[in-house]
Image (cartoon, rainbow, N blue to C red; front, side, top):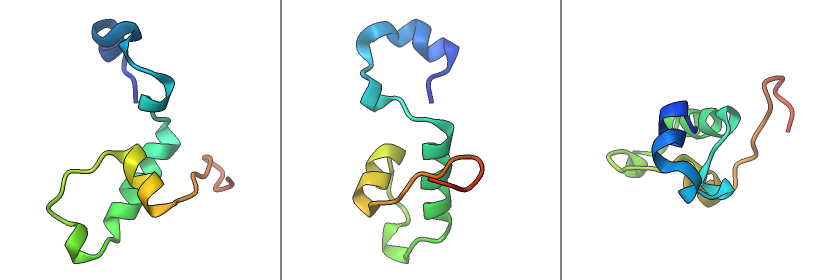
Length: 64
């Protein structure tokens, strides 16, 4: 998620594929809440995790 502070510091150096939506962040968090033991103890980037696990991103109403 791109906060105002991050936007001020990073400016135009971030591309659109590096900025995640709230829904994308939530899907990644939920996936990590119920993950196998071998996934724990690692550092994850939410957008990469969603791609790796081929997870759909749902809107706030629960629909894709």
